[in-house]
Amino acid sequence: MARKQRALSERVHRIRNGKGAVHYTPRVVVKFRDAVQLPYQDGTEKYVEAQRIGPWKELAARHPGIRMRRLFNSVTPTKLAEMVEQARNRDRTYKPPNFFTYFVVDCPAADGYQIQTSNSRVAPGTGASVSGVVSLQT
Image 1 (cartoon, rainbow, N blue to C red):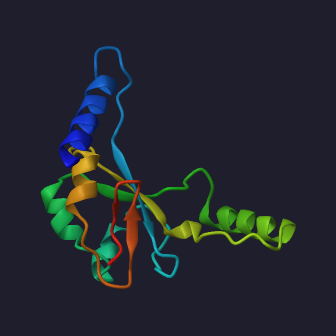
Image 2 (cartoon, rainbow, N blue to C red):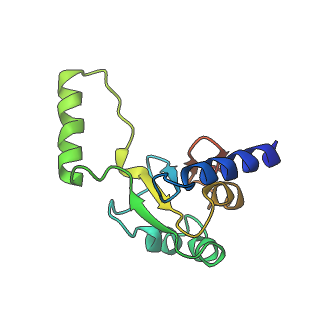
């Protein structure tokens, strides 16, 4: 099964990087548990290691050039919080996730699928999940 997923990942990457195609940087979406407290800013990877959430230095050594950025970057964190509050005011039953625990890992020199499957270790209780492939919850 993993071999098929890897082959699909390679095929999609080749198709998109083919002649005349738009070039892109592969990325992996990471969602930490709502209780995890990380600054919602680009470059948050230094806090992942410092707070013992996961082995970021090891991951970065295996996949040079990766970096962590906030997923929701079209609005400021303050505006995002205001939007969540507006939604809560409009619908008292609305239970939003903690949007400030969603990040992306840009993988310029690495295959996103490799990162998804190779970094499945995080500290107990911190929990993270990687978009649609592997759960990093321990």
